[in-house]
Image (cartoon, rainbow, N blue to C red; front, top):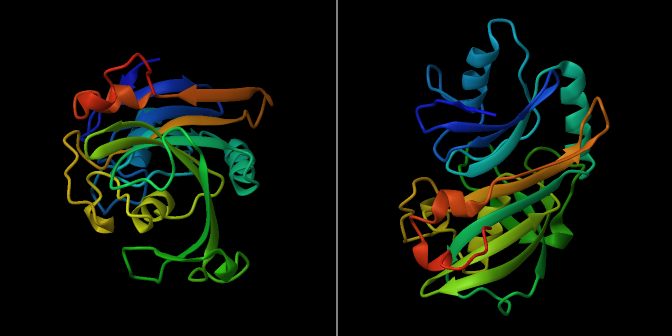
Length: 243
């Protein structure tokens, strides 16, 4: 459906109507809340839609992460989408390139149940045992973090991993992988020593599925990680699979 230019690269539009817009965010572009005067996906969309337009942030990706993200164009759509995210009714799937020894055989799914917290003013999140979760607690209380993961390709020191979180905590995927000795390539904050040649970190939101908040039509959008990483990790994408 077209592209929008940004300082971090082109933003691909996957879907747009009067209620919402779904795009592929390039790595290096904040979703929202950028420093004053700096560009974000939110400011790019505000400029595209025109002065006074409503742009509702209902979910976000970390700045160094690429992939599919949805924004609302009306308050009603924002409320409907936010409810789906809150009720864990949105299907999310990610791909990541990691180093280290993944704690499961090739192709086998593994589930991680943890709790995650972050103290105000600190950049990194902290991992806790699942029993420490207090989802009704304050902002700093550990929150439930559930994730399914599996390795689909191994090549030398790197592996291509598929991730299916049922929760959406800050830095959740980055922290849960790093804590198992498998940091995401390029993620120096959580211990990666290998740079990501494609920019940002090697984490890509490849699938997002939800129900349209106005028409109630099921929608699903995909952005294969091959499009973002085949040049940076050719050994992982030599087959026909377009993950």
